[in-house]
Image 1 (cartoon, rainbow, N blue to C red):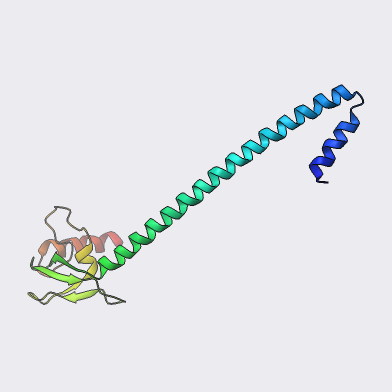
Image 2 (cartoon, rainbow, N blue to C red):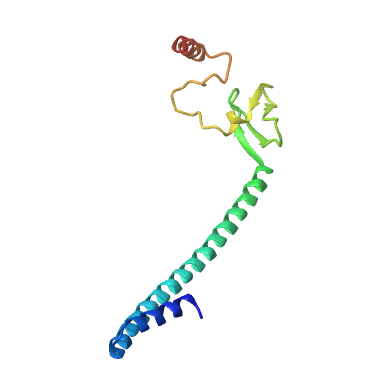
Length: 145
């Protein structure tokens, strides 16, 4: 006999009047049935959440595959030194720089993918010929001190 049935028998035996015992048992059964309905509802919602989680996981896996695949494709970007539009591939491994075929400057991948275009007219240290960059570097050195 389950512990719930034992407890119900105990309640039934505790109430001396058989009519009152029947009434108490009916109320307890209503409570148990309501609890069962609520538990079933929780189980259904949990299953729905598990299905949704599986869908999201699958979508994220697909997105990851597409991203990895796209990283192996060739892109076009502007050289931050000479402005030449050049094709490049995201390098695999640790190597994150390459040479511009026109001006032969070394370009860091961050320079190609980053969004340093703040419309201020400065190259943000991407070239050695910019007086403004030299001034900015000096200002930064002074700020650090």
